[in-house]
Amino acid sequence: MSQPIRPTAHAVRPAVDRRPRAAWWVLWAVMWVVAVDLLIGGSWDAEYHRTQPFDGFFSPPHLFIYTFAAVAMALVAVLDVRPGLRDCFGPHVTLPWPVPVLGQRHPGSLLLLTGGMAGIALAGPADAAWHTSFGLDETNWSFPHAMLGCSMALISIGFWSCRHALTGVPPMWRVTRYLLGYLTVLACAVVMGPLQNYPTQEFAVAAGSFGALATNPDHQHLVRIVTQANLTHTSPAYVLVAAAWAGLALGLLRAVDPRARYWLVVAVLVGLSLSGSAGAEAQRYGLAADPRVTAGLPLLTAALVLALPRPRTVRLRYLIAGAAFGLHAFLVWGTAVTPIGYALAACGAPVLMLAGAAAGTLLYRVLTRPAGRASLWLTAIAVLLVPAVTGTVDLVLRTMIP
Image (cartoon, rainbow, N blue to C red; front, side, top):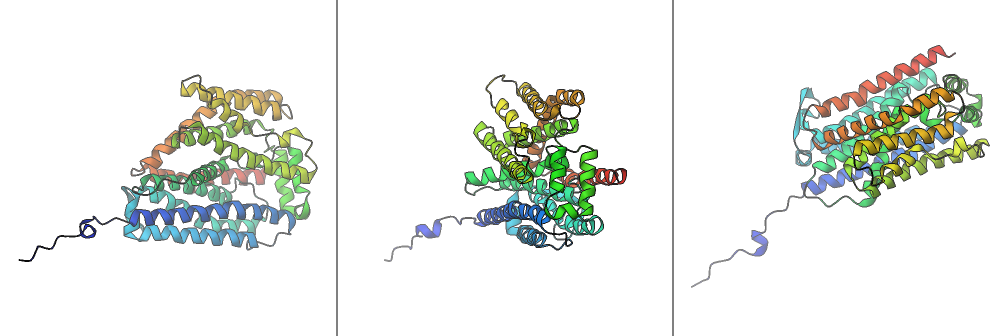
């Protein structure tokens, strides 16, 4: 009598769902394409404008930037339109009305990432129109530049959210975590606009006198705006806005990973890259002997103070870190123009850092629970509201300062 056929181990083994792993690899590819675009394309664009006469929007670095952006958008579109990949990204959000490609229900985490990509797509034509109308006469608060920066911040938050929503995938590589934190902090610096770019008024004048920029009348108007409105680190506005940015960055990073070694390393990477860039430019402009140009960022001072084990109350630690931030900024830049006003502004740094940290914690709650309307509001604020506000400021400055 024949024996019954027994199922083999291969036959009874449950099928492995490979869709989350495939979604993770596409997401990982998007992140590295964006990183290359931002780090290489951004540096190339700045150097190109310094050394080459302005030749319109379609310059080689612009073509590089928007080509890589198109590749990233195409990869995100794959996640959006493939149901097997799309549904790996957690609960869906009901949109107010049907949206092409997305429909009326879409994963909240993927919505944040897609919204950032949509912002980049909208900023491209706006940037072309802006350069056509104003040439190089625009601060980083201009509508297209702010939209690009805010969209990058939204993309970074969308990465965190999508990775948090994925289950059944390998842990994120350490270098990927550090890179993502670095990109997030840099992208959030968009709120500082030109206040981030110019340590001193002398630096702004020297930068405007270098290479092709020296003979560009549009850029010379930008230099007048920066110097007459004092949109530099020596402005009291800098210590307030920068303290809020530092609090936002540290609050978000500490929520993502409470271990000090993570957010301290990210803060050091950001500080070294920005200070190194300023130092290289100072050497080029003959300002290397000016400590106000080559000094490190107060972000590092605040991060080190925040890493101290005491006091145990988190809010108090942020207030002390904010006080250290304000003191650092005052000692380096505070006595250059308006010492009393700068000192008063530095006294407000602790409150601004605490408020920024609260905003960073709120962002973390949104990216870990993006299924509610908060993800829709965050997308609208980043892509539309903030660029509209800062773009208005840019236009007002251009009108007031001939």
